[in-house]
Image (cartoon, rainbow, N blue to C red; front, side, top):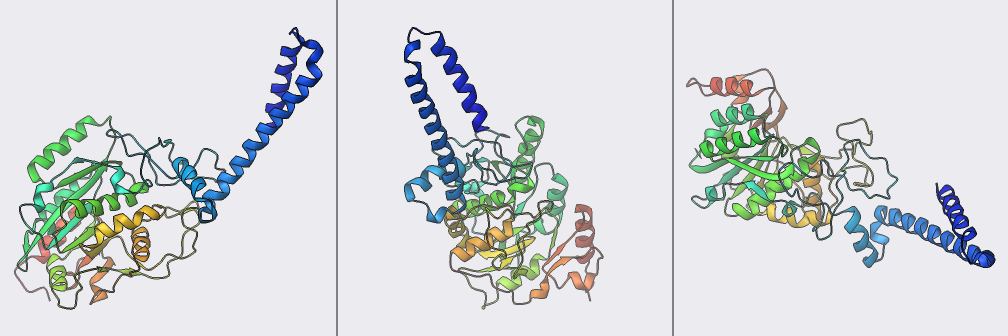
Length: 390
Protein backbone atom coordinates (compact mmCIF):
# COMPACT_ATOMS: atom_id res chain seq x y z
CA UNK A 1 0.00 0.00 0.00
CA UNK A 2 2.86 2.38 0.79
CA UNK A 3 4.56 1.70 -2.56
CA UNK A 4 1.47 2.56 -4.63
CA UNK A 5 0.96 5.73 -2.60
CA UNK A 6 4.61 6.79 -3.33
CA UNK A 7 4.29 5.99 -7.05
CA UNK A 8 1.17 8.08 -7.37
CA UNK A 9 2.80 11.05 -5.69
CA UNK A 10 5.86 10.67 -7.95
CA UNK A 11 3.72 10.71 -11.11
CA UNK A 12 2.00 13.86 -9.92
CA UNK A 13 5.38 15.46 -9.27
CA UNK A 14 6.53 14.62 -12.84
CA UNK A 15 3.45 16.25 -14.33
CA UNK A 16 4.02 19.38 -12.28
CA UNK A 17 7.74 19.69 -13.12
CA UNK A 18 7.40 19.01 -16.88
CA UNK A 19 4.89 21.81 -17.21
CA UNK A 20 6.74 24.37 -15.10
CA UNK A 21 9.31 27.07 -16.05
CA UNK A 22 11.83 25.36 -13.78
CA UNK A 23 12.10 22.22 -15.88
CA UNK A 24 15.89 22.45 -16.12
CA UNK A 25 16.23 22.07 -12.35
CA UNK A 26 14.06 18.96 -12.14
CA UNK A 27 16.75 16.39 -11.30
CA UNK A 28 17.63 18.21 -8.05
CA UNK A 29 14.06 19.03 -7.08
CA UNK A 30 12.86 15.56 -7.95
CA UNK A 31 15.50 13.90 -5.80
CA UNK A 32 14.80 16.16 -2.83
CA UNK A 33 11.05 15.67 -3.06
CA UNK A 34 11.39 11.90 -3.38
CA UNK A 35 13.64 11.90 -0.33
CA UNK A 36 11.08 14.00 1.60
CA UNK A 37 8.24 11.66 0.64
CA UNK A 38 10.26 8.61 1.66
CA UNK A 39 11.20 10.21 4.97
CA UNK A 40 7.56 11.09 5.78
CA UNK A 41 6.41 7.61 4.87
CA UNK A 42 9.05 5.98 7.08
CA UNK A 43 8.15 8.34 9.93
CA UNK A 44 4.49 7.32 9.59
CA UNK A 45 5.37 3.59 9.73
CA UNK A 46 7.57 4.07 12.81
CA UNK A 47 4.88 6.06 14.62
CA UNK A 48 2.21 3.42 13.93
CA UNK A 49 4.48 0.60 15.06
CA UNK A 50 5.43 2.48 18.22
CA UNK A 51 1.78 3.22 18.94
CA UNK A 52 0.75 -0.44 18.68
CA UNK A 53 3.71 -1.58 20.77
CA UNK A 54 2.99 0.91 23.52
CA UNK A 55 -0.70 0.07 23.62
CA UNK A 56 0.05 -3.58 24.22
CA UNK A 57 2.96 -2.92 26.56
CA UNK A 58 1.85 0.34 28.08
CA UNK A 59 3.86 0.01 31.28
CA UNK A 60 7.13 0.25 29.31
CA UNK A 61 6.19 3.42 27.41
CA UNK A 62 7.43 6.85 28.38
CA UNK A 63 4.82 8.71 30.45
CA UNK A 64 4.25 11.51 27.94
CA UNK A 65 3.81 9.04 25.08
CA UNK A 66 1.37 6.97 27.12
CA UNK A 67 -0.75 10.05 27.77
CA UNK A 68 -0.83 10.83 24.07
CA UNK A 69 -1.75 7.28 23.10
CA UNK A 70 -4.37 7.03 25.82
CA UNK A 71 -6.20 10.03 24.41
CA UNK A 72 -6.80 8.16 21.15
CA UNK A 73 -7.10 4.57 22.32
CA UNK A 74 -8.43 4.54 25.84
CA UNK A 75 -10.73 7.54 26.34
CA UNK A 76 -14.26 7.12 25.14
CA UNK A 77 -16.95 9.76 25.45
CA UNK A 78 -20.16 9.53 27.44
CA UNK A 79 -23.26 9.41 25.33
CA UNK A 80 -24.03 13.10 24.66
CA UNK A 81 -27.73 12.43 24.22
CA UNK A 82 -30.11 9.52 24.56
CA UNK A 83 -29.21 6.57 22.37
CA UNK A 84 -25.87 7.75 20.98
CA UNK A 85 -22.51 6.33 21.87
CA UNK A 86 -20.23 3.30 21.90
CA UNK A 87 -21.76 -0.15 21.98
CA UNK A 88 -18.99 -2.24 23.47
CA UNK A 89 -16.25 -1.64 25.99
CA UNK A 90 -13.31 -2.71 23.84
CA UNK A 91 -10.46 -0.24 23.49
CA UNK A 92 -9.15 0.33 19.96
CA UNK A 93 -7.24 2.79 17.81
CA UNK A 94 -7.50 3.71 14.14
CA UNK A 95 -4.03 2.29 13.59
CA UNK A 96 -4.63 -0.99 15.40
CA UNK A 97 -4.17 -4.22 13.45
CA UNK A 98 -5.84 -6.36 16.15
CA UNK A 99 -8.90 -8.24 14.93
CA UNK A 100 -11.94 -7.01 16.85
CA UNK A 101 -15.45 -8.46 17.23
CA UNK A 102 -18.02 -7.23 14.74
CA UNK A 103 -19.77 -5.16 17.41
CA UNK A 104 -16.63 -3.25 18.39
CA UNK A 105 -17.09 0.49 18.95
CA UNK A 106 -16.98 2.87 16.05
CA UNK A 107 -17.06 6.07 18.08
CA UNK A 108 -13.98 8.28 17.95
CA UNK A 109 -13.04 9.85 21.26
CA UNK A 110 -12.84 13.64 21.38
CA UNK A 111 -10.28 15.25 23.69
CA UNK A 112 -11.11 16.01 27.30
CA UNK A 113 -12.84 12.77 28.31
CA UNK A 114 -11.60 11.35 31.60
CA UNK A 115 -10.35 7.80 32.06
CA UNK A 116 -11.87 4.97 30.02
CA UNK A 117 -15.21 3.81 28.75
CA UNK A 118 -16.27 1.90 31.88
CA UNK A 119 -15.49 4.77 34.24
CA UNK A 120 -19.04 5.62 35.39
CA UNK A 121 -18.57 9.35 35.85
CA UNK A 122 -18.15 9.70 32.10
CA UNK A 123 -21.94 9.27 32.02
CA UNK A 124 -24.90 11.07 33.56
CA UNK A 125 -28.29 10.04 34.89
CA UNK A 126 -31.24 10.87 32.67
CA UNK A 127 -33.72 9.46 35.20
CA UNK A 128 -33.05 9.41 38.91
CA UNK A 129 -34.61 9.03 42.35
CA UNK A 130 -31.96 10.49 44.68
CA UNK A 131 -34.52 11.28 47.38
CA UNK A 132 -35.13 7.59 48.20
CA UNK A 133 -32.05 7.50 50.42
CA UNK A 134 -32.55 11.02 51.79
CA UNK A 135 -35.91 10.17 53.32
CA UNK A 136 -34.63 6.99 54.98
CA UNK A 137 -31.43 5.09 55.70
CA UNK A 138 -31.68 1.64 54.14
CA UNK A 139 -29.97 -1.32 55.69
CA UNK A 140 -29.80 -2.96 52.25
CA UNK A 141 -30.19 -1.55 48.73
CA UNK A 142 -31.00 -4.09 46.00
CA UNK A 143 -29.79 -2.82 42.62
CA UNK A 144 -31.26 -4.73 39.67
CA UNK A 145 -29.71 -4.23 36.20
CA UNK A 146 -32.47 -4.70 33.64
CA UNK A 147 -33.14 -3.77 30.00
CA UNK A 148 -35.44 -0.78 29.41
CA UNK A 149 -37.99 -2.92 27.52
CA UNK A 150 -38.18 -5.66 30.19
CA UNK A 151 -41.12 -4.37 32.20
CA UNK A 152 -42.32 -7.96 32.81
CA UNK A 153 -39.19 -8.69 34.88
CA UNK A 154 -39.56 -5.44 36.84
CA UNK A 155 -43.24 -6.06 37.58
CA UNK A 156 -42.55 -9.65 38.70
CA UNK A 157 -39.91 -8.39 41.14
CA UNK A 158 -42.30 -5.66 42.39
CA UNK A 159 -44.86 -8.38 43.15
CA UNK A 160 -42.38 -10.65 44.94
CA UNK A 161 -39.12 -9.96 46.76
CA UNK A 162 -38.94 -6.36 45.55
CA UNK A 163 -42.11 -5.36 47.39
CA UNK A 164 -40.55 -6.07 50.79
CA UNK A 165 -39.74 -2.73 52.44
CA UNK A 166 -39.18 -3.95 56.00
CA UNK A 167 -37.49 -7.31 56.49
CA UNK A 168 -36.44 -8.64 59.90
CA UNK A 169 -36.87 -5.09 61.19
CA UNK A 170 -34.52 -3.61 58.57
CA UNK A 171 -35.27 -1.13 55.78
CA UNK A 172 -34.78 -2.64 52.31
CA UNK A 173 -34.85 -0.64 49.09
CA UNK A 174 -35.16 -2.11 45.57
CA UNK A 175 -34.15 -0.09 42.48
CA UNK A 176 -33.76 -0.91 38.79
CA UNK A 177 -30.76 0.27 36.75
CA UNK A 178 -31.32 0.91 33.05
CA UNK A 179 -29.26 2.25 30.20
CA UNK A 180 -30.42 3.94 27.00
CA UNK A 181 -32.28 1.95 24.36
CA UNK A 182 -31.75 4.49 21.58
CA UNK A 183 -32.73 8.08 20.88
CA UNK A 184 -35.28 7.11 18.22
CA UNK A 185 -37.39 5.14 20.70
CA UNK A 186 -39.24 8.16 22.10
CA UNK A 187 -42.41 6.22 22.91
CA UNK A 188 -40.56 3.70 25.05
CA UNK A 189 -38.80 6.50 26.92
CA UNK A 190 -42.16 8.14 27.68
CA UNK A 191 -43.42 4.80 28.99
CA UNK A 192 -40.39 4.55 31.27
CA UNK A 193 -41.11 8.02 32.64
CA UNK A 194 -44.70 7.06 33.41
CA UNK A 195 -43.51 3.82 35.04
CA UNK A 196 -41.09 5.74 37.22
CA UNK A 197 -43.75 8.30 38.20
CA UNK A 198 -45.84 5.38 39.43
CA UNK A 199 -43.18 3.36 41.24
CA UNK A 200 -40.27 5.77 41.86
CA UNK A 201 -37.75 2.96 41.45
CA UNK A 202 -36.04 3.49 38.06
CA UNK A 203 -32.49 4.78 37.63
CA UNK A 204 -31.42 5.39 34.04
CA UNK A 205 -28.05 6.46 32.68
CA UNK A 206 -27.11 7.52 29.15
CA UNK A 207 -24.85 4.58 28.23
CA UNK A 208 -26.15 2.19 25.56
CA UNK A 209 -27.95 -0.74 27.21
CA UNK A 210 -26.35 -3.84 25.62
CA UNK A 211 -24.85 -7.08 26.85
CA UNK A 212 -21.39 -5.81 25.93
CA UNK A 213 -21.90 -2.85 28.25
CA UNK A 214 -22.73 -4.82 31.41
CA UNK A 215 -19.49 -3.67 33.02
CA UNK A 216 -20.46 -0.05 32.40
CA UNK A 217 -23.89 -0.78 33.87
CA UNK A 218 -22.38 -2.35 36.98
CA UNK A 219 -19.96 0.51 37.51
CA UNK A 220 -22.81 3.02 37.14
CA UNK A 221 -24.64 1.07 39.87
CA UNK A 222 -21.58 1.47 42.08
CA UNK A 223 -21.41 5.18 41.30
CA UNK A 224 -25.09 5.65 42.19
CA UNK A 225 -24.67 3.91 45.54
CA UNK A 226 -21.54 5.93 46.31
CA UNK A 227 -23.02 9.30 45.34
CA UNK A 228 -26.74 8.91 46.15
CA UNK A 229 -26.94 6.39 48.98
CA UNK A 230 -23.66 6.32 50.95
CA UNK A 231 -25.38 5.82 54.33
CA UNK A 232 -26.78 2.37 53.48
CA UNK A 233 -25.10 -0.51 55.30
CA UNK A 234 -25.06 -3.00 52.41
CA UNK A 235 -25.73 -3.16 48.70
CA UNK A 236 -26.53 -6.05 46.41
CA UNK A 237 -26.26 -6.31 42.65
CA UNK A 238 -28.84 -8.89 41.63
CA UNK A 239 -29.94 -9.93 38.15
CA UNK A 240 -33.54 -9.56 37.05
CA UNK A 241 -34.04 -13.31 36.50
CA UNK A 242 -33.32 -14.23 40.11
CA UNK A 243 -35.35 -15.71 42.92
CA UNK A 244 -34.24 -13.97 46.13
CA UNK A 245 -35.19 -15.17 49.59
CA UNK A 246 -34.85 -11.76 51.16
CA UNK A 247 -35.55 -12.98 54.72
CA UNK A 248 -32.63 -15.41 54.61
CA UNK A 249 -30.37 -12.71 53.19
CA UNK A 250 -31.14 -10.22 55.97
CA UNK A 251 -30.72 -12.92 58.61
CA UNK A 252 -27.27 -13.66 57.17
CA UNK A 253 -26.24 -9.99 57.10
CA UNK A 254 -27.35 -9.51 60.72
CA UNK A 255 -24.96 -12.20 61.93
CA UNK A 256 -22.27 -10.67 64.18
CA UNK A 257 -19.52 -12.31 62.12
CA UNK A 258 -20.39 -10.36 58.95
CA UNK A 259 -17.89 -7.50 58.40
CA UNK A 260 -19.25 -3.98 57.98
CA UNK A 261 -16.35 -2.84 55.77
CA UNK A 262 -14.49 -4.27 52.74
CA UNK A 263 -16.95 -7.15 52.48
CA UNK A 264 -18.03 -8.86 49.25
CA UNK A 265 -19.73 -12.24 49.18
CA UNK A 266 -21.84 -14.56 47.05
CA UNK A 267 -21.12 -17.61 44.91
CA UNK A 268 -17.32 -17.62 44.62
CA UNK A 269 -15.57 -18.35 41.33
CA UNK A 270 -11.96 -19.51 41.78
CA UNK A 271 -9.30 -20.14 39.11
CA UNK A 272 -11.67 -19.44 36.24
CA UNK A 273 -9.88 -19.47 32.85
CA UNK A 274 -10.25 -16.53 30.49
CA UNK A 275 -12.15 -17.47 27.33
CA UNK A 276 -10.07 -16.73 24.22
CA UNK A 277 -12.41 -18.23 21.60
CA UNK A 278 -13.77 -15.38 19.49
CA UNK A 279 -16.97 -17.36 18.92
CA UNK A 280 -17.80 -17.34 22.62
CA UNK A 281 -20.17 -14.94 24.34
CA UNK A 282 -17.55 -14.57 27.06
CA UNK A 283 -14.57 -13.91 24.79
CA UNK A 284 -12.03 -11.44 26.19
CA UNK A 285 -9.06 -10.44 23.98
CA UNK A 286 -5.58 -10.69 25.44
CA UNK A 287 -5.09 -6.94 24.90
CA UNK A 288 -7.74 -6.21 27.52
CA UNK A 289 -6.83 -8.95 29.99
CA UNK A 290 -3.43 -10.61 29.43
CA UNK A 291 -3.59 -13.17 32.26
CA UNK A 292 -4.93 -16.66 31.54
CA UNK A 293 -6.95 -16.91 34.78
CA UNK A 294 -9.23 -14.41 36.51
CA UNK A 295 -8.70 -13.49 40.15
CA UNK A 296 -11.26 -14.96 42.53
CA UNK A 297 -14.56 -13.19 41.96
CA UNK A 298 -18.24 -13.54 42.87
CA UNK A 299 -20.76 -14.77 40.29
CA UNK A 300 -22.70 -11.85 38.87
CA UNK A 301 -26.16 -13.37 39.38
CA UNK A 302 -26.21 -11.80 42.82
CA UNK A 303 -23.49 -10.57 45.15
CA UNK A 304 -23.61 -8.58 48.38
CA UNK A 305 -21.13 -5.95 49.52
CA UNK A 306 -20.61 -3.53 52.36
CA UNK A 307 -21.54 -0.09 51.11
CA UNK A 308 -18.08 1.38 51.60
CA UNK A 309 -16.92 -0.60 48.56
CA UNK A 310 -18.81 1.15 45.71
CA UNK A 311 -16.76 4.35 45.97
CA UNK A 312 -13.57 2.28 46.20
CA UNK A 313 -14.57 0.27 43.11
CA UNK A 314 -15.18 3.46 41.14
CA UNK A 315 -11.77 4.80 42.12
CA UNK A 316 -9.99 1.50 41.41
CA UNK A 317 -11.61 1.24 37.97
CA UNK A 318 -9.70 4.28 36.75
CA UNK A 319 -6.61 2.15 36.23
CA UNK A 320 -8.20 -1.15 35.13
CA UNK A 321 -8.86 -1.77 31.44
CA UNK A 322 -12.54 -2.56 30.92
CA UNK A 323 -13.78 -5.86 29.54
CA UNK A 324 -17.34 -7.13 29.30
CA UNK A 325 -17.25 -9.88 31.98
CA UNK A 326 -18.66 -7.61 34.68
CA UNK A 327 -18.35 -9.92 37.69
CA UNK A 328 -14.71 -10.74 36.87
CA UNK A 329 -14.11 -7.00 36.41
CA UNK A 330 -15.39 -6.36 39.94
CA UNK A 331 -12.97 -9.10 41.03
CA UNK A 332 -10.18 -7.13 39.35
CA UNK A 333 -11.23 -3.97 41.21
CA UNK A 334 -11.20 -5.90 44.49
CA UNK A 335 -7.73 -7.25 43.72
CA UNK A 336 -6.54 -3.71 42.93
CA UNK A 337 -7.72 -2.70 46.41
CA UNK A 338 -5.70 -5.54 47.97
CA UNK A 339 -8.87 -7.38 49.00
CA UNK A 340 -10.52 -10.72 48.28
CA UNK A 341 -14.17 -11.82 48.26
CA UNK A 342 -15.38 -13.71 51.31
CA UNK A 343 -17.17 -17.03 51.27
CA UNK A 344 -20.69 -16.67 52.72
CA UNK A 345 -21.43 -18.34 56.07
CA UNK A 346 -23.42 -21.01 54.23
CA UNK A 347 -22.26 -21.25 50.57
CA UNK A 348 -25.09 -23.68 49.73
CA UNK A 349 -27.56 -20.78 50.04
CA UNK A 350 -26.23 -19.21 46.84
CA UNK A 351 -27.48 -21.60 44.18
CA UNK A 352 -27.39 -21.32 40.42
CA UNK A 353 -30.27 -22.93 38.51
CA UNK A 354 -33.41 -24.57 39.81
CA UNK A 355 -36.35 -24.61 37.42
CA UNK A 356 -38.31 -27.17 39.45
CA UNK A 357 -39.95 -25.73 42.54
CA UNK A 358 -39.38 -27.42 45.85
CA UNK A 359 -40.92 -25.43 48.66
CA UNK A 360 -38.61 -26.77 51.34
CA UNK A 361 -35.46 -26.11 49.27
CA UNK A 362 -36.57 -22.61 48.30
CA UNK A 363 -37.23 -21.75 51.94
CA UNK A 364 -33.56 -22.35 52.81
CA UNK A 365 -31.65 -20.67 49.96
CA UNK A 366 -30.86 -17.02 49.24
CA UNK A 367 -30.64 -17.10 45.42
CA UNK A 368 -31.74 -19.20 42.47
CA UNK A 369 -31.69 -18.41 38.74
CA UNK A 370 -35.10 -18.82 37.12
CA UNK A 371 -36.48 -19.07 33.59
CA UNK A 372 -39.15 -16.39 33.46
CA UNK A 373 -40.90 -13.59 35.38
CA UNK A 374 -44.04 -15.71 35.67
CA UNK A 375 -42.01 -18.52 37.24
CA UNK A 376 -40.79 -16.08 39.88
CA UNK A 377 -44.36 -15.05 40.69
CA UNK A 378 -45.54 -18.67 40.88
CA UNK A 379 -42.68 -19.85 43.10
CA UNK A 380 -42.91 -16.85 45.40
CA UNK A 381 -46.68 -17.21 45.82
CA UNK A 382 -46.31 -20.86 46.72
CA UNK A 383 -43.45 -20.20 49.15
CA UNK A 384 -45.48 -17.57 51.02
CA UNK A 385 -48.37 -19.90 51.80
CA UNK A 386 -48.96 -20.07 55.58
CA UNK A 387 -48.16 -23.77 55.95
CA UNK A 388 -44.64 -24.77 57.05
CA UNK A 389 -42.40 -25.24 53.97
CA UNK A 390 -40.76 -28.45 55.17
